[in-house]
Length: 447
Image 1 (cartoon, rainbow, N blue to C red):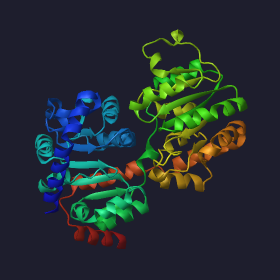
Image 2: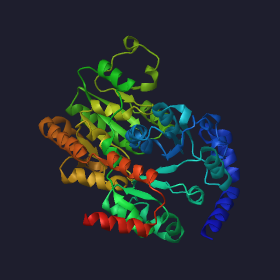
Image 3: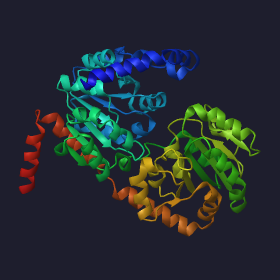
Image 4: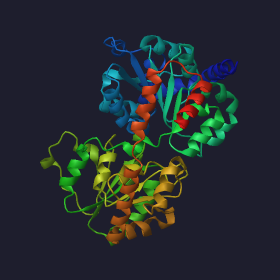
């Protein structure tokens, strides 16, 4: 009955919003891209499975694709008899996934419409569906349950920001989440919230955060160019910035540059659709700047050397994680404005001193852990320039803070191995009721 009401509400929203969606598709490429796949047209490249059963892994966008990168490698090594197919929701996530995992097995996740979901489940016939974080879609989950396809959730979390909304819809989620086969939570708080929403306690465990296991796969082209063209200079990397944060950084830039004249800044907006707006902001700022995209296809010898005080607009996808390795200091965006923050682990793995704003609810557990170890600085907009100057000029203390951040990163590793163990159990064991699983867990605890 809940699913019927959900589908009626979904169709009503789609019908009401149809004019807007049609206008956006006509005027914006990102809304047209992958539309056929989203509506249930299964691409031919997915139909050739070489006789291997399929595991379907869904990662929403860039952040989730990065988080499961190591897991994808380990799944392939642990389950060589299976073909892994990967879906994303966003265009940027799709592009990165195709680059990292190969286009032949990457596709757009269907909209949560019964016929679209049915088309993919019929074509792929997956032996298991793996969801990254908390991408719960009722029709997709119900379609798996009806076909007795086990569903596992890895890196599961319920952020402080989304928790009230989940609580309001608890009656919708309880009958759905109670049928998940495994839920591997990032933290104890996440596990408790998922159980409260309806997940069976016997099937919920804390595995840690997959992002602690992710290493920059290889040096990005931008990193290599910056090493050469910015040789002898220090770099401030401002990553995953949102609207309002670039202006704050540009406001602080003259003071920061006065304290460390041999400095350049790499500015990396979170969303590609904002590259043009940030470029326009830089154009009127009075600062010397260059687009990273202008270097594409050029030999390093043909690229003008960077000058002290220059700003590089990192208007590419998938290079930020590697560029963080060059940072003297890293500012992690989405945190000066109330948007929940972004992932501080990317610079932490390189032992880079990290600065964030006060808004980090999306990464509270990670950030609080770093704060406990004095491995990150938190500053509001009004103190941004002051703290940047302090970190850049007090190198001994900044380097020690960066070393502590790397230690936290290394100490928290292991979520991937724990996830593989749980997924192996899901694939190899027959269907087990929650009560039986609970009894087995108590029996294992007595041995």
